[in-house]
Image (cartoon, rainbow, N blue to C red):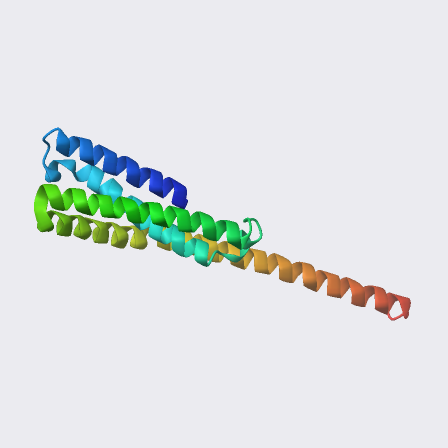
Length: 159
C-alpha cells in the first residue's frame, strides 16, 4: 500500500508533466496517462488517509505517536488540496469547465477501479493478518492456562 507522501509526490509529478505537455501544445485527451496517474494518486491518497485514521490492529503497535501521524497527514492533505486547486485552475483556464468535469470523471473512475481491485485485496490481507495474530494470541493463552492447570494438578497428585 502506498503512503500519503508518495501519493503527493506522484500527484505533483503528474501535474507538472501535464502542465508542461499542455504548454507544449498537446491536447488534454493526448495526456491521458498523466490524468490517470493524477486520478490514481488522488485515490491512493484518500485511501491512505482513511487507513491512517483507522489502521489495522497489527499496524497500531508499530507506528509512531498519534500526534505525529495526525500532523503528517494534515500537512500532506493541505498539499493535496493545493495541488487540486492548481489543477482545477489550470484545466479550467485551458479547457473550460467541461475539461475540469472530465478530470473529475477520470478521478471517479480511478477511485472505483482502485476500490474494486487494490483496496479490497489489502482489506482482505489485513483481515487475514488480524485473524492470524488473534489465533496465535489465543493459542498461547490457552497453552499458558493448560500449563498452569497441569502444574497445579501434578502438585496435588492428580496426574
